Every structure is written in C-alpha cells, then in structure tokens.
Image (cartoon, chains in turn cyan, green):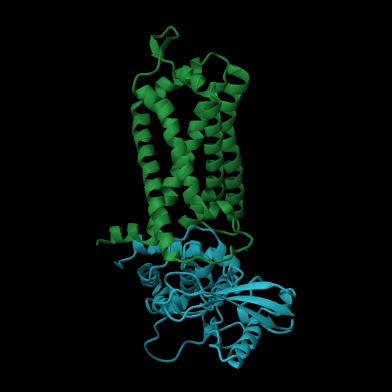
Length: 249
Length: 228
C-alpha cells in the first residue's frame, strides 16, 4: 500500500519544527512502527536523517512508542499502543499525520521523541510502597475483596506512556497520576502511605506544569490501556480527604 | 503558604471551587425558573410583581442574592484563569483535530460557553436588575400600596425581537454549558460510582435541556402570544 506521511521534524528543543512529507510503500501486515522503520531505511538510503522515535518492547507494555497519529494519541484503534496498531487499519493512498505528544510538560527532544521525565518525578513524589526491612509478605496472605483487587489491577495496567496528557485539551496528567494513586491506594500495602502519597503526587503534578482537569474524557478515550475516569474521581476525593483530615501539610 | 492556600490553589482545589460554585448556580437556576413561571399566569402580572416585592425586600433573600453574585463572579473569574493556564500547559495543539468518540463539543468549549453566558447575564441584569435599582420601574397598586411593576419591564423587553433572540442564544449556551457542567461537577467532587454516575449523567442531560427550555418559553410566549 502506498501512503503519504506528514511527519513532524524538529532538530531539538530549541528549534521550531515543521512537517515533512514522505511517500512510503508499506503492507497491511506491518505494525505502524515497522512502517516507520521502512521510512527510516528509505531516508538512510537517501543519505537523509532518519526520523527519531522511541520504541522498546513493541508488544504494547512499555509505553515508549508515543506518536499522535491523525490527531489521536496512538492512532485510531481504541485501546492500542502505536506498536500494536497495524497498517490494515489504513487504506491505500491515505495521508497520515504523525506528531509527537503535545503538552508543555513534555518538551520535544527530537522529532517524535519527547521528554517524559516529569512523569518520573511524579512517581518519585509518592508512587511507591516503602518496604524497609525483611521479605515481602506473601500476597495471598492478605485478603482483598475481588472487586477492589480488580480495580487496583485495572489502574495498574497504566504504562505511563503519556497519551492521556497529549489527548487532553488542557495537557492535564490527572489520568496518569490518579491511576498510580488508585493502584497503590486501593491495596492494604499501599494504604499506609496513602494520604502522604496523594498530597505529594498532586503537588508534584502541579509543579511540573500539567494542566487542570475539566472532565473532557479525551484521556480515557485515547488511553491504550483504557484507564477509567473513575480513577480521577477517586484521586479527587482521596485528595480532599487527605488534605482535610490528615496531618500531612 | 499555609495548607489552606496550598489546597485552594492546587489544580484539584481550584476545580473544587468551580464545582461547588457551579452546583450552587444550578440550584439558583431552579429557584429562578420557578419564580419566573409566574410570568405565565394571566393575571396582568400581579403574582409576579408580588413575588418580586418579596424577593427584593426579604433580608434572607438579600443575603443569598449577594452570595449568588459572588459565586457567579468567582465561577467566571476562576474559570477564565483556569482556561488561560490550561492553554499555556497545552502549548501547541495537534495539527489534526482528534476524532475520538465520547468527547462532547461542550466539554472542550466550557470557557467560550461561559463567556457567552456572562455576556448574556450582563444584558439580562442591565435590562431588569439595573433598571429596577435605578428606579426606572413604574409603580402599580393592587390594593396593598404601590409596588414596582417589573412585569411591565418584562413585557417591554420581550416585545423586542432582538432581545428575545439574544435570550435564546444565551440560553442555548447555558444548555451546552450544563450538558457538560452538571455531571462534571459531581465527577470533580469525586462522586463517580458505577451505580450513581449513569443516574447523574441522565439527570444532568435532562436538566441541561429542560431548564433552559423552561426559561426560553417565557420570552417566546410573551412575544408570540401576549405582545403580538
């Protein structure tokens, strides 16, 4: 299949960046990244600079293959990362626009690669469980209600790719942060540090310059792991509770 | 900063203020509409004018109305600052508009709708509230002493097509604003539950249609059936 690609090219964080148009011959069995590989081989053959993009596992769990494809984070297929998106979802002769994540808190490093270390700092602010000594307790020894375990697990499927931020018209990181707060806070092991965690993670999220949630729902709609908006509501109420009732300042 | 200012200036704290003021204004809409329906009584405006007298003289209503003005301003000013900040945090937007389903047009245009509603409010307040405050209202006597004939002001305003149309535009903006805002206020408060959220969403959408429709009936009824 013959495709026209409009790819965002940007030398570095300081450069302005613009779209470049390329023609690519792909086949429908390729993943989107394999199609991008074909483009890069073509560019290398032509002695041109290949398009920089992040990728790692190519099986939908690492959260690095981040591209805005035709205006949608990870492309048109619901609940799918770019690496799991196959070219059979496009038609012969299609023009496909490929951009990096769009948010001030994710500055472009080069082409389609953005700096997502702001997410790392949100995690560092409280997205963990402290186990200071001894071995971890056998998971099955702690009774957890099935529905609660499932909610925690659903939240834990967040791969931290940042699609939510890019999809959000406000550039808000509420879906990501709330998924982490939920996945840890719903379980007894994470409950201990819950108040401190939610206050510190929200403070860090604000400090990183993410926008404010207005419940548009684009985050969840474009999330490759389909993280629910329930998590945002949960983080809101847990935040109110933590601020108003805990000793954490 | 103390924990209180930290809380109220945090992203979630600001949204809490938007949600609470929004919910108050939703309650206000119900009371306002209920009062306005007295305009439809065919008694030459007596019920409405007596109601107006109560609303403008009761000390309790006075306190609530000043609270209402403050909440409208807070909701508007805070909304605009959030919108401006969010434009900055978003930065460059995608070159192609996203086609993702489940995202309503209203939810992405709350600030625009809010500005339209605020402009409408200025017209509305200038037309009735200001004229009444400036004593540009005639007096009428129903046998209990002279009272302000606000009904006449309503009649005069709604006999002009441009005002009726401006009201319809303002109320359409209000409808869209509520279409997203009603359920969104509950989500911000953290009230999201598999059992209740569908109910809240249904009530929100019904409210967003019925309440502005109720308000819209009044100028249309005046223009079409009473004046002409």
